[in-house]
Length: 249
Image (tube, rainbow, N blue to C red):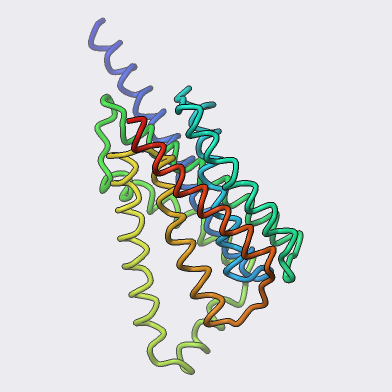
């Protein structure tokens, strides 16, 4: 009798874990697709500025899903992060509503993913580590993205073959990109496991600041004083957040 109950309980737990891993994979795919779509309508610099609000969404989801609360001063530091993006949006000459909405959706999905992966990696009963979680997510992500790609981009194979003939290093570039994506996701999980989802997203904003500068230098997209002021406020909020986390450990 006890054995049967134990088996049922183990089956239920395994099913629940599979459901959450599948959810994590789908949300991850949504965040990547939404981010890529937004790049068709928004310059990289503004895309990264909007993405800097991820800590705000992460703090919100962390409280709703795990009831984890930070010090009030930490939440206060997120105010200039969000305010800066609002200011930057008003001063962005290349603003596009649909692209902006897709970027916000991708940002929220990325925050939800960070909190959920933190829950899965911190659970003692599930015994998941960063490598295993990435291993289980990958085939589910393929099952989601492959049909979606064939439906949304029916000529993707022909386009890829054409590009491969025009650019002889395309295959190598795709391979390098895949390897870098794997390493980035693995490090993402490791940082989440050993710190927190919110800290991960705030640290990610340092990458955003670099991406903004490089984007403006390479693509020469127009910027305004208001846009620069807004993103500067966002970066200052990130720095203040890091200091508040250090003082309230």
